[in-house]
Amino acid sequence: MPPDGSGYHPAAHDAPAPPTAPVAAEPPQFAVPPEPPSPTPPPSEPTPAPEPPPQPPAAAPPRNDRPAPFDPSELIEAAENARRRGQDVEAARLFRQALAGAPRDATALAALSDIAFDRGDFLEAADLAAQASRAAPTIGEHHTRLGDAYLKLKRPAETRAEYERALELGDARARRRLELDAPAP
Image (tube, rainbow, N blue to C red; front, side, top):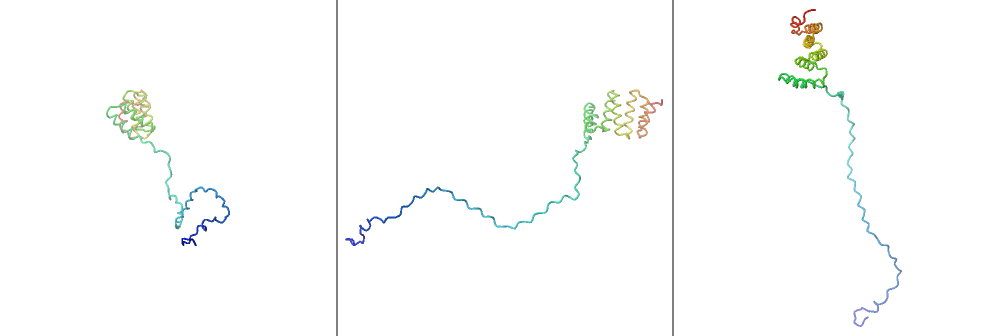
């Protein structure tokens, strides 16, 4: 026991430690981020049954890839209005525009024939009236119009034939023309 009575003896504590086996140095450790936890799957829900494939309509209308036919009626109406206002150049332009989309439109052909007749171009009037009468052969007025153009071109046999055809189709104006303008040969 130490002289001070503390129970501490310096010699006991100053003695060298017993020899131990040498410790190998550990390799340096690098900080590796921890892997994120794997996502937990959502709770299992019952999988809905697959829907049946859609059925085609029972009676689908046939597909028509053709464009709608050209309707010249609005152009013709505008042209007729221009003609009533005395604007024959504008009317002719509109009638020709209508014919560009509907080349056999008898109304536009007949109106252009009338415009040509009024300006004294009887050859063009006859050509257009002939086209109108071919496009609508049962319209008596077209044959009367053609007869009028033939009369101006001094073609009496054709004039008479057209007036007679017009009369057969019910154009009463043809009767008067036959009596006055196209005497029998």
